[in-house]
Length: 294
Image (cartoon, rainbow, N blue to C red; front, side):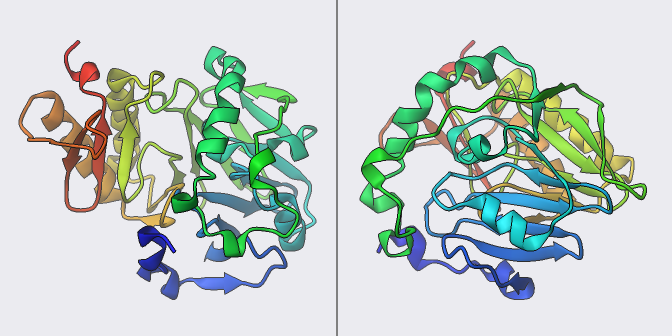
């Protein structure tokens, strides 16, 4: 068993209500009476997708790694008609998109359209023995044939669009590029929840891939911090490791990345000697040094 798994369960989950489901690959927790975290603890990425149940429609935010069947989970939680959206199109968040093509909406972006070629390699890399707990894999899952299946978006949306789930439950789409060009955040206006995808989570935040843009990332953080300072957000909801994040940590994240850009923070090299890691109390940044020398 890998060292990352030995540290589980993370303490935050003990305070959350766990929901019983039939799909053993996932654990489901209620973080709000109508919001469920669909957690994949048996892979080192610890991906979290989210399911919001409205009075007329429900919203699935990301579809996970595609190892377990997230469609079965959603159907067990609610029968309300479904909308599906991705916070971004890295492989660990779009794995079951193919199951939802009739209800899948998303940002129209060249990165999203051209991202398919890298998904097979990345998916196979995530099958390495030190990254996954095989004892928990679904019985019908084959590691060697694992890949992200192709999918099509049925409807394109834009920055500031509103997803109406009924009874004044409105979700605002916020374009937040930087981690990827197609990254979005989602503001649950009524419940004051901000779903930020991979722009922030408790752990090493990866900003080293070719599609990363640090300038855009900072602008996106500034946009989200404005929402916090305007008193529109009570809780940040992240897509890895733990679901519930205090809003003040996002403010600290913005301050931290600006210090890095200004050369005020010392880095250590990652184990592969390729990237710089900048450590802070509750998170770190893993950055390609080329991005800092532009």
